[in-house]
Length: 287
Ligand code: SF4
Picture (cartoon, protein in one colour):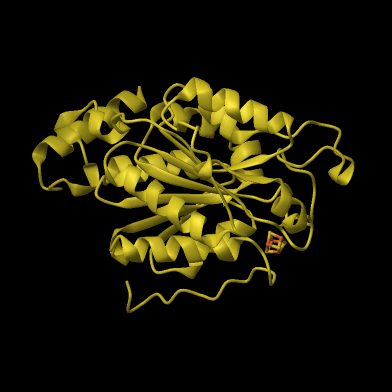
């Protein structure tokens, strides 16, 4: 693969927050020594979805909103892969919102990075689920994805970084990848990633972010306390950054139901039981 596929240069606008996410992800994968042939990046539709073209990896551009079911399938097929889903707030929180809820509930061993810029940048700046009230005549309240994640009992890793704070973003990216590598399931990392062309929030976010990692009284292992603190900070119009919540549970792939055919991509394809299972599945489908 490394001989036939050379990563392309990003095509994002100068100053786009997505550059920071790419830098953090590349650095983290190298620091953890994940070789290119073990990286599977599943990307969503939107400006952020071109990220998978810019680093050495196996990549797949999923249909709109379908990053998480595709990533879950890839991980179940081959649990040895480091599977990372990347996308934007439009892809993940609008058309993909149902999949986000169920992926958090299932807890597959995938890292999901959402580049949240509060707009649909690729289609020239319409209001997205995380746009502020008033942006492009938006009359709705913005969604709070981290609180959504906290409300789902199966979630095991929730964090938020900011492209404007690269050191913390790298730390959180490493923590997210380590969480899934340890067999604890899905790590969900939202990154505040400004769209300088249609919704330049650098100035606003510089003053509204709040570093929860530096808050000595905050306990990221207590779901109820985390939810209450998030609600409090939202009232104060602050945006918490850092490791918001983490819990030790087993990943979906470690609880595979069909042990005969676990890890299908790693099976010996000459095993006659596979032919029998395929014929049975085909027959039941044709009925
Ligand atoms: Fe980034 Fe916005 Fe440009 Fe898209 S339109 S590349 S999100 S700055």
